[in-house]
Image (cartoon, rainbow, N blue to C red; front, side, top):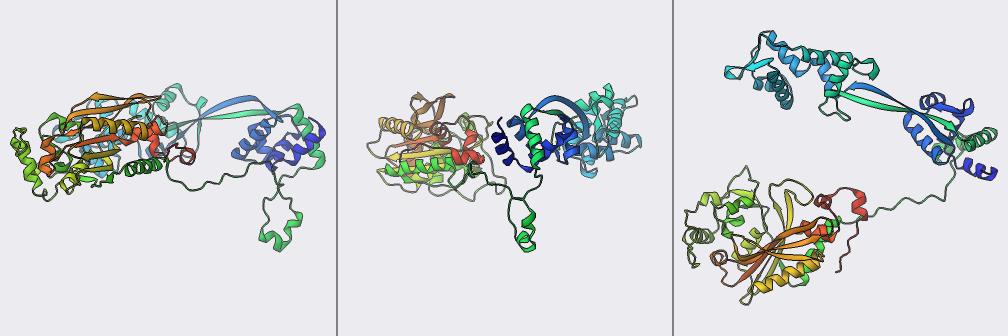
Length: 522
């Protein structure tokens, strides 16, 4: 490194770097703890300064030791003061007290999960048994040694300090490892912490820069801004201000924008409106009548089980079913009514039809629209939020968006439906490959499923479609063919937005929100 390069480097130093380099004035090799003692830097500032100087090639890591210590978590500190749940239960039983698990939860101020875990462990170890009335009893030959030892280990760890790992017996170490929590409060009793203590040495360039720094006189304190107090008191005359570094990139201006998924939903709505569709709307809290019964889903049929719905607790039922649709749909279920069908042949339960649920399918919006007297011919769509109990993974969520639609007209047929589905797969989902597969739905015949190929996840089902059966349309006052579809909009967005996990659609990661680009042609 040339003298001019050294001078330029020194001029760019942060005061923390000056402090750190000056710590090596007496020794060319120091541990992190030695540097802290000499320079007065705290650990966080030391980490910053060593990182900067290491990147500049002025110091290097020449050694590293790891010290392990044990502290109590918040739960452990509470157990140190009051005793573990197991010890408290054993002590109370030895004192002759009588109580049940419910008594512990209600009067001892303990978490139900802790009580359940403690009683389960004591029962499994044959320390206690549960007798008549649910009361706990201490067994005569109970061996509570293991639980008492856990309490002793907790007492050996200082309440507000740490205990070095080598100072702990092998038996106590086993107990700690069985009951530790890595970080955070958690439910663990102990926290095991590993602390690295590195040794740093000056490089040849670092020695030259240190020598020059001492000759010139290093600034270990400087101001980054001129304040009114400095001007008023004249203190600015004796202060060195931090130099501007015009080579640094300016901070990124983060302007407001819509969430990427919100942009996609707006794009889908734009596409449908541009094709002449009218938007349908419906309530999130729906009754079973419009969500299932009006769609000719029998109240006893296993097909109903595909909708694992969320029931509303209060109020649990709506007041009434709209006339005349309640009677007409009930007749279609019982014997076909005036549809020409024989129906499902069972006694329709009106009270069950009144049960309130969170809408499980967007087709409920289509049912309400048909009952409201739609235009014929007519085209309708809806972006409907739906809810079904499901395990969350890369392609499933318990709440999701469906793009629902119906087209009514005397000349509508199945070929029309397939053409629309192709259009949706290509223009909305941006899918390059898609398939039609035969399917069954109680309310459409014939029925079909649309599958598209995700570039990373493979084939995914987008949803179902078909022609509404007369048992659906006629009781709702529609006497022309109606094609319908309900497609998973979230999965369509995964393909269009090129993401691999459905959960990313609702990400709160600001970097994702700000930088995700959506290539959509409007």
